[in-house]
Length: 574
Image 1 (cartoon, helix red, strand yellow):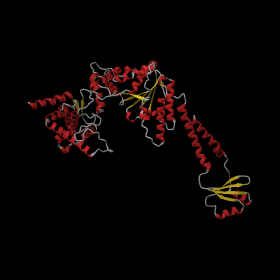
Image 2: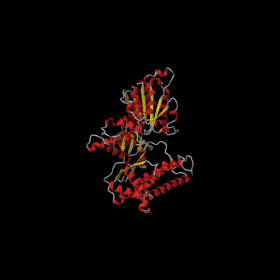
Image 3: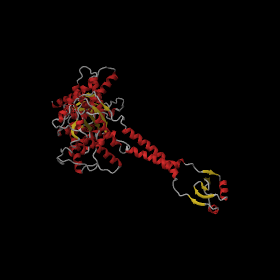
Image 4: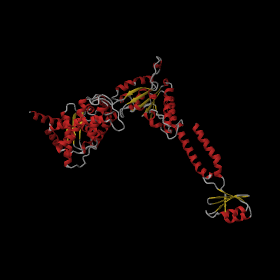
């Protein structure tokens, strides 16, 4: 209301002080002959010389005489002065009336815009924030996050019966912070929590508090909590809370001050209201490291619930939930799909089943088969299949040699993940691909597994060099080199797996690393490349056999790859 009163006062002042000047009648324009007669009759009292003419004041009126520039000479001025009139020149600058004619419309437009913005944000009947009173979501709709659901059971109990907690002096956390990668189900869990408790639910995002005018974002925070108290018991869910909860840096710009004001309002609201009223705030972010410490202290977001990527059992449970609305063919094993999708989030798994259903619909069948699921997984991991891409026979053979090198190294190294399939059909930006899938989820990766991954990554370029020569290697190993460099850099700078550097964490200086660290990264990559070349040179027959199989069939399954390699190893051993 204070802002509204200030804008109204500004409009009134403009109307009182500037408006009459705009509404005043303009001076009457007369001819030069009439001006000459008045001058001869000594009726002219004052002449103001300005651009375009003369402003003339007589005994009974003010008039304007239009005269072209350059006709008013010194002799002419003396003649006018001799008639008894006072002569003056207009000072340079803007005319007040002209300036007012520009400013007043701008002030009026700005006033209207401000009043509209204020009414939109503070009007009690505004649609924001939207309140949902009965959500259909339940914890049965959320799979793969059993620990998180168990952690939230006490929140449900508090919202249903807060007196049971207050009798013994217990205090429920004012805020819960859900932390986890994108797509793991943070929003879904918040909805299920409100649905299980049977309370009102308000869902907003951090970007909802951004506004073009100063003070509106802060007022939106206050409005959110005011509405929540009216609808208590209520859950407030703030998605991407890092948009308004970032660490304060003390910047001097207006944007920095506005951001800090909005964050301070959030801190005050969370620390000020009585939690027994049944209002709990749930924030969601995947950037907890950037949040302000004051937001995480006890009394605000003092409890964190980690919503991580699901394990193999969680993935199977999530697939079963998403498969409720998908017709699966008899014999389709979701357990095998879960095993072959390590690192997939709940959103990824839902997308997998949807893509498989789309493939089935394109073929005109009513059930999703294992082949549809495999095609959907390949599309998500490798990209869309590009059979229309035409490549020459020479390039096709080169791609086959490259992928055969990867597959051969993966089969010969016990620590490597098993080959699931190898193909020379272009997918996405890749001309070929070897897909490897682990037997189980890994949470701690040993050095031998990392070294095996590096040798497999180097296997494609090593095969090219051995078969075609050093001068005919191609750019096809660019992604392999980037992947290997990334792994080795972490081994040296973060994981303490370099004897030369030791178990220390090495920080970057700008975009570069210390020289000895870069030399160590180069040494490890060179060793892994040499190991890949040795592996392929010792099993050249197996490489040629895999290359021929890829050229004939374009795609070969992992069992066939292992069968070819094992058969040639047995023959060599005999």
